[in-house]
Image (tube, rainbow over all chains, first blue to last red; front, side, top):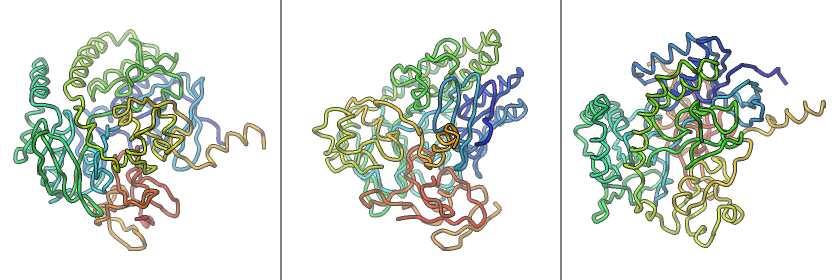
Length: 424
Length: 81
């Protein structure tokens, strides 16, 4: 087995939070290693695929990261971790060991998918998923797209797809008009945000943006061909080639949980310094609670400075963090999924896509543990990352525990540890 | 946009340099990438490495996530749909 890589600070995840943490820690002289699963840094929001045009903030931070001296290791998935910080990483099918004095977890978030009849049809994507595909080379030219979901993410995605030549048939926001208006009015102290929202809305001005509308079902033979939308009293069908449907974001907390960090309300609990309940493990950005890019950058910088031993320089950042967290909490309330979304399922609707578990098979089951034993729900390749959050809302079941490997890998990568430990 | 050639299910196709395998498949009209345990056709959902619905065989190695791999010249991609 090759010698482990060592650094004072190891950052997991190269989205805005991880980039900020790695850059500021390296700038003040710490040795920093930044691990990321994607082919290049940027995370989901700053993906630098073949067609993307990155915003100025992204270019500035990526330049700063490259100048900082932090070492970036891409295509690196953390599959196991021990304490004191020792990470086992799958890098293009090979094992890499990483040791650190402290770890900053910046593992981002994933989309919240709520099952409805037809959601397993190819062509049904996440809202962020469609954006990711567009940034990594999928042509949306002349494709008919329905976007149905929740939250501010709908606006940039609709704008980006229209720019890519898509015919955005409709943008459906599940939250009520009152909720959306109240959230927008609450942004009066952030005129830049309101201007940005207006600019994005103008970019898809020819497509309707409807509040209080959600997906009932999707139809298609082989791929999606239409979607039934509803406002609760009327339902209607829209023909489409692509349906983007997801209802906000879920923190990626698996690595934090595996390391023993406490959660609060599904997010990783952190103190004023972004330190988790496990000393020398920091957490920043979406895993500490969905808050968006600006908050992720601020939290990342605070953790980077503290980890590098110069936390006293972060007073201004702490004030920004408090203000941004207030916006995040209002956003969570305004765009919370409505109850009707949990009643879209029929008996035959697939809940767990990996193991093909239908909703009616979970009817009589009372706990997640029992459900796993009887049906293998949540035990497939995604390890419950897709159905877990839905089941929490549908059934009130919380994910019971996390197991290594944290992402599927080849058996050989796990075996190296045993054979070298036993000297064989 | 510079092009590179890959093979999809034995068929030689051109794709944009820098695009992911998922993008190459979709741009060639392929939305079904694999089958679920009960045989349902599936394609990408999250497009960010979480859902594992976009798995294909790349250069003989099964279960690679098409959304996470950049196309390389002469790459062999096999779907299972």
